Image 1: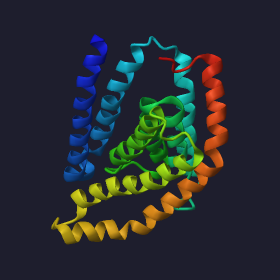
Image 2: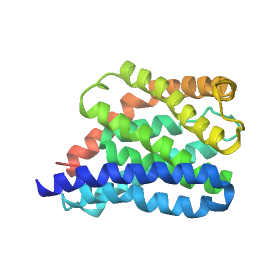
Image 3: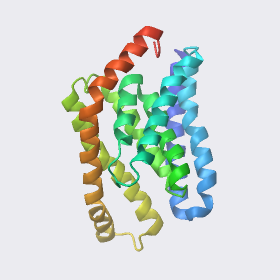
Length: 231
């Protein structure tokens, strides 16, 4: 019980610090992205490992999360010739549904950082880590409350959340490059990215239609067989 109370204090505090780091990255430009990416990684692991350690997990429980993060990153690299048509978001959502909110966040954030080794790191990297991490986290929360117990609902969630991902990245664009910041400039920035957000949403929906049911069945079997993520 004491651990749960501490976690409820630590998690919101870490979230506020992450948002502060994102704003710092946008306002101070590329000069600070290396530091903020490193700090982001450390901070995002704090609540995850704090809650994870309380169950005294085995190392094997980290393996499927690492594999899914690698697959999500590799999917982004393989589909590089097709902008915004990538399975990355679908894999992150599946990870969150299969293994829970913390695992979904870690999968999304790690996939962004790892794939940018190929695409190039920049001040946008922490924002991508945050956007994909929150996507995986929310998928885990929705699944935990049984809102994603059907493939159609998973696809609807993926379609909508791709727009949230795009809007989070628009905030970075606005804070870092748009001057002056007013209602008109904000709406123009969001409008300019609408086509790309829609492409991302449609592609993710298609990948979820193809992958969600068979992958979740396999991952559920793995969880039951090895007793992963219990408690």
